[in-house]
Length: 92
Image 1 (cartoon, rainbow, N blue to C red):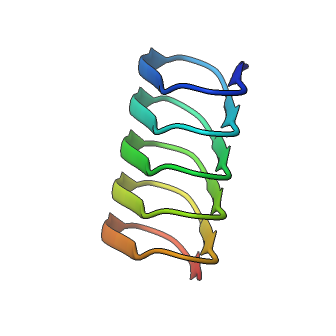
Image 2: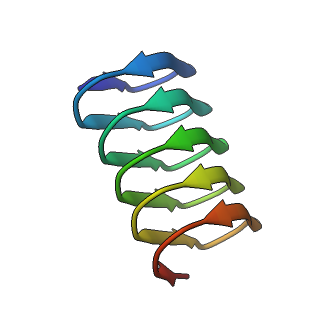
């Protein structure tokens, strides 16, 4: 788990489940072997390669997922959602 109240979080490689959250910054996950849960209230979320499921929520920014191997759930109240490639079900 990675958490901050203000500032960016960047995780390059995760072998287990990644639970990443902050209140005021960007989140970037490079390579995750399992599921990712990412939540921020202000900033962007960028997920490069996730082999498991993704739950991404953002109150004030964009969500980008490049390659997701599992199911994807993404929600933002103010921003765009960009899905490049996913192999299962997407719920937006």
